[in-house]
Amino acid sequence: MSSNPFTEDHNLLRESFRQFVETEITPNIEHWEANKICEKEIFTKMGAQGFFGVSFPEAYGGSGLDIWSAVVIAEELAKSNCGGLAMSLYAHTYLPLPVLLALGTEEQKQEYLTPALKGEKIAALGITEPGAGSDVGGIKTTAEDKGDHYLVNGSKMFITNGTMADFIVLVVRTGEGHKLSLLIFDTKIEGFSAVPVHNKLGMHTSDTGQLFFENCKVPKSALLGEKDFGFYYIMSNFQEERLIASITGTASAEHAMEVAKQYMKEREAFGRPIGKFQVLRHKLAKMAITTEACRSIAYRAVAEFIEHGPGAYKIVSMAKAFVCEEAFNVVNEALQIHGGWGYMEDYGVARSLRDVRLMTVGAGTTEVMHEIISKIVIDEVSHTKQIKKR
View 1 (tube, one colour):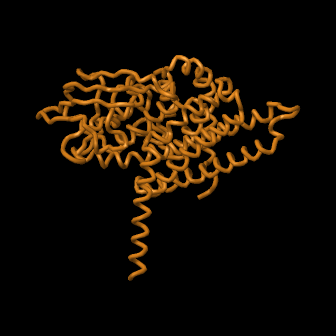
View 2 (cartoon, helix red, strand yellow):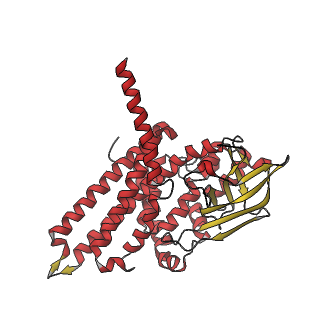
View 3 (tube, one colour):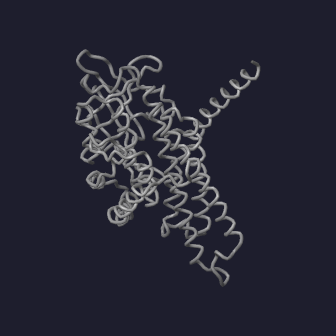
């Protein structure tokens, strides 16, 4: 794979979206952060410019470009240093919508996917519960078959866009064990309620909600894909979410490193710029090496995902685990370089650290990634031994 996978079209998209960020996002960040809000208007503006659907088919309002175009959008959002908003925007696009595209009927796509890509409807993915995070098989929210409808009861927790969403791709239990199903849940249904979750360390500009379902009648037409196959659908969809997380983490590390580099040029101590001190120059060198390593594994994961789809779960899991841990380390070093000012809000690096901390938890914890990887590696070792015996 080329070290630069981007074409001229990608570069033009990057420049166009960068201008959008500079005019529509950057001027509002301080206000959004201070008030802990995520405004619906930004979804409408994103959709109107076609930035949600860059890698979706033209038939549903997308641009029909490749996944590298989605990488461009994710990178520029991360570099805006507004992690909460970035999470809400890509959680709208790359969590529920790929599932809807892959499994939805034509009617479902026209009713939900097309307006979502236009930013006219906001989407969420409802998986996590108060007692079931990475353990998807432990989901307790039920959908009881009542003949002409499902009766949904239960709750969800930490749902991005949870209080804003017009619809939720909802994971529900429809049987024992791993028998889960997906429903397109319209949030206008009676019995549904959502409350915002504000007491978060970071991601203040992301709408996070706790959701409640009390005898919600959901029509049978809302079933997405086949009944009882939801667990397998979600396991496949996780790969795309983790891929975007690795790209976002890399870009966040790069942004923090650039901020630290600029500060080292401007800040003086003991009569000279602090960038003249070897200890800080070497710290920056290690940050640059780490960021480049993050980019290499993240881009390789993208390339393999393009070739193998969800089957690239080994490298995607590796990228997610490595990048999200190392991105936090790079941002933490950037704060250290700023000294006392890094702990303040003035340079934005404190916000970077708060926001990037979630990345080792969301979309599957680092520990879960390691468990997935270890099982694959052990199976590969066993397979190799069997071949040698033959």
